[in-house]
Length: 126
Image 1 (cartoon, rainbow, N blue to C red):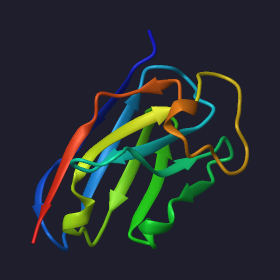
Image 2: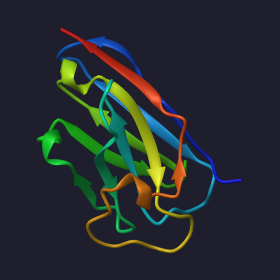
Image 3: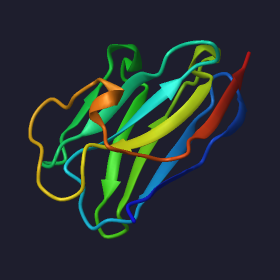
């Protein structure tokens, strides 16, 4: 069974950093990324990495977030710096599909991602 398990969320003060992790059960995913859902709002795409390891980011990230992956550990990371209260959200790891490859700009619609983790909550207070 394909599984994605997030970790690393928590409650922090504005300006600090957090690193989220997403551990995958499958050997390969075509494209993995992160979404977030702020309280009372719709889920939004944060960023994703294609099969070449190239990261793509939503405009609101503005250099504060960095995606990386450890293929040996089958883990995707989201380093979040200079956190703001508006970053408060449930953060979800997602994958397009297992196996195969995806090159270039990834989809930004949540319905296009087949696999999802349970989410990890991030709260940023001012």
